[in-house]
Image 1 (spheres, rainbow, N blue to C red):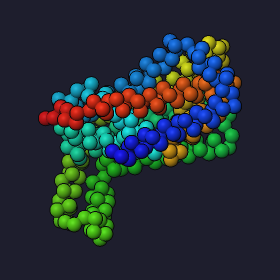
Image 2 (cartoon, rainbow, N blue to C red):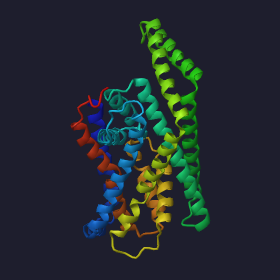
Image 3 (tube, rainbow, N blue to C red):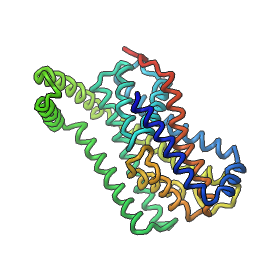
Image 4 (cartoon, one colour):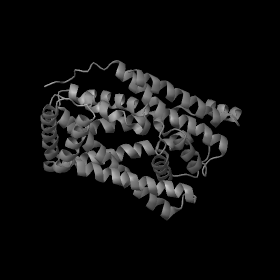
Length: 337
């Protein structure tokens, strides 16, 4: 818990530093733009980020329901928000998945099945991310919304490659029992050698049991391909809801925009793929630089800075706040069989 408190403080410090550099050269215009922003468009932006969270929760709910019929959607929504908190305060969003497994276990699902649920959900998310990204690439190639320099283009292509590789690795892990058995036993042997693990045979037996649970769960997805398709489509819709948010932020400034919903979705897809390389919670600095660079071709400097502050709060810091509130009300013993 101390680590999470420390990470939360770190996120707040990063936010203050980043926002300072955003507003320091033109703070009067930026503050003015923020003060005149249309509240109804901002509310619409908040509604769409909540829709994103809801669609993500429905994906987890649909899969978890196959393992525990008592699972309720409202509890999966709560767990999704808690996941946003842990993703938001850890580098590369690595804290969310372990917490999801822990919460699913407390909901009456075995660790092996919970792990498989999270892997399958993340696999569908990766597939949706790459799919929407490819559509964005094609869209920009056809309509020429903006041009990226060589550096940004390299990062974009690298981002696509990494996300594709992650998806393929998850697919391999999900269905290759021999590979998982080999890796698990190798880790146990290393643990024994360095005296981290004391009882080798007992640990082997525990691992084999968990691995069997994991692959029994994986068989479910082989048999119910429609379930994976459903989760894939919901993840695609979730990403579209997330990617369209800058449009409402821009409209809140009551200016004439030569920008279409498709161009905003395309630009947002590029921002997220490029910006997530930063090994800092929330991809901070990378996300902000990508946003100002790509959307800067549509708005002037003071407006883009104002839009960045609003967009970043709604899509990142709001999730941490809501997740922190959900965590404070999390009981840890919901819906057990």
